[in-house]
Image 1 (cartoon, rainbow, N blue to C red):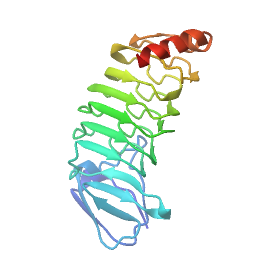
Image 2 (image 1 turned 135 degrees about the horizontal axis):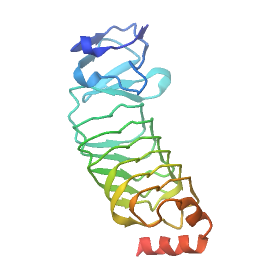
Image 3 (image 1 turned 90 degrees about the vertical axis):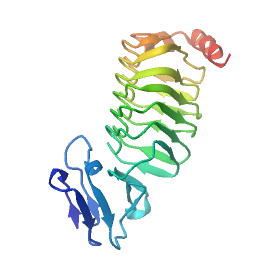
Length: 231
């Protein structure tokens, strides 16, 4: 009833209907299904569509893995969960948009070499820990949905041409540490909390290094910068 895929040995997999759960093959959340063709036969717990493997157990629709058949460069997600490490190192993705009802796991899009655009239009969205770290080709990151949170190490060591945080209320520790940004980063008036080293060693940021002290201790300055962002 449980499958532990070690897929260096396989190039195709047909899951029987008895499989109820699949576990990751190692600690970083990588399933390695990107090397395989996966199909399901009368399985009520898993399904495949467009090269993505979905888990539907307990009524929660979750993207469990991306197989080698995945070929959608511009991904729009709505009312779905994305498991840990699902798109890690995926070379197909060019852009991803998050709409209402999306929850993503740790490292879900980390190390994607060709990912150019990330857009968050959903309110209350949380960018998971290390979700986009080491993404080096980002031309635009736009988080405009109200009340959004950027988690720990979310964009660590990424390269971003333009960063829009207009909907963000919380930036957690190390979220943008060592990020290289072409344009200065404006911190909006909606921002309520910035964690330790959130922008540490970030090139091009409006506040560098100990940004949490600069923002939290200078509320009037934060609001002034926020107005400049909207102008």
